[in-house]
Image (cartoon, rainbow, N blue to C red; front, side):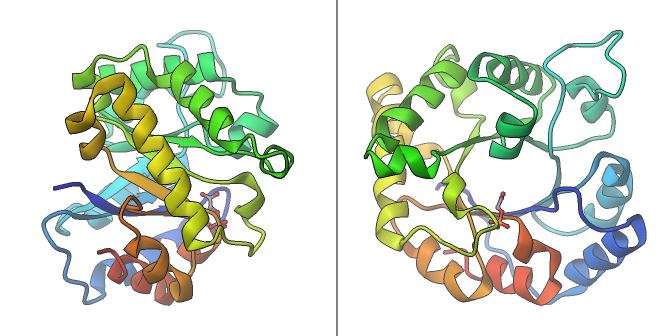
Length: 253
Ligand code: PGA
C-alpha cells in the first residue's frame, strides 16, 4: 500500500525555542496514524538533532532536512552533505524545492546529483517539481514537469526509484493562498504517474507516493488528499501552526 504522507516544510521560520515547542505540541497531540500514514517535519539544519530526539518515540513521525549539497564532501563552506545528515539519522531530505531552484539556481542536473547522494546515504529524497504560472498559462505544464522528472530521476534503476517520494508543487500556488483545484492536482498527479509508468512500468509507478504542495490548509487538505493519485501533502505556512498541521495529518486517507 502506498504511503500517505503529511510533510511539514518550515522553511526559514521559527526560532529554536519556537520550533521545539511546536514539535512538542505535535508529538503530544492525540493522532492515531495508520500503518501507511507518515508525518514528516523538514526543519532547518541546526534543529535536526533536537527534532529527531523529540519525535523518535512517536510512531511513523520522521525528520527531514530541507536541502543537502550536491557534493560529497570537501571545501564547500556553508554546505551540508547527505553523509552528515545520515550521521544524524535524518530520514528524509527535500530536493529541488522551487525556492531552491529559483533563488539558488538549482537545475535538474544538480538535483540528480543530490538524489544520488541521498540514496547512497539511505535518505529518502522528497523530489519537488512543478510549473510556474506562465507555463500553465500556455498549457505546457505537463511537458515541463515531465522534463523535470526525466532529467533528475530517469537515470535511476527501478529499485532506486522506489525509494523516492515526489512532491508536485505548482509554483503559483506556493505561499499565495491559491490552491490548485482538486481536479488540477489529480490531473497532474495522474500525469506524473503515467510518465513514471511509461519509463518503469505500472507496478513501480503505483508504489510511488506523490504529494501535493501549495497552500494546503486544514480546510482544504481532506478534499485534496481524497483524490486517487494524491498521497498527502507538502505544507509550508500551515505547518507552522500546530492546530492546522494536526488537522492536515488527520486528513490523510
Ligand atoms: P505553502 O508552501 O504551503 O506555504 O504554500 C508549500 C511549500 O513550499 O512546500
